[in-house]
Image (cartoon, rainbow, N blue to C red; front, top):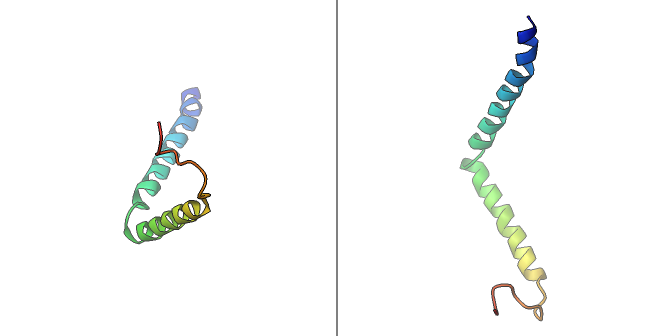
Length: 62
């Protein structure tokens, strides 16, 4: 019976990991995708507007 108690934590962690991966995959796309894309676009717009006009851009120059 010691082998059962030795394998149980590994099995539980494997099942939990599989469940987390399944939730991540199922939450991609669909109605959530539009909300996530809008949130990212808003964050990028805020970051772009907060950039100082006199600051050098990383894409320009050497």
